[in-house]
Image 1 (cartoon, one colour):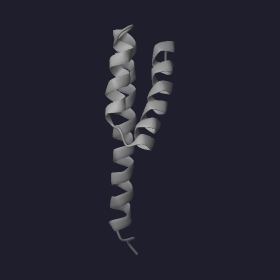
Image 2 (spheres, rainbow, N blue to C red):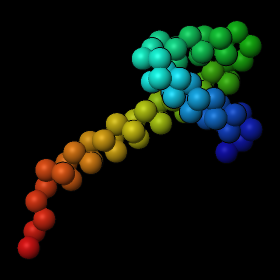
Image 3 (tube, rainbow, N blue to C red):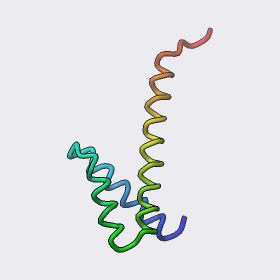
Length: 74
């Protein structure tokens, strides 16, 4: 990834963690708005990183649940 994507992804990790710790999902949008004040490119990279990370997290939870329900075939 490039510098913008790397920095945006690092920030996304921190903001997602803070959002969960404070039980405030709006924090992600607030940070995105703050980023937009100086760089739309960085905001797009940040929001993309957030979406990817949250969707992967959701998919992993789904997969774990499915695997827990599946019975091993013998």
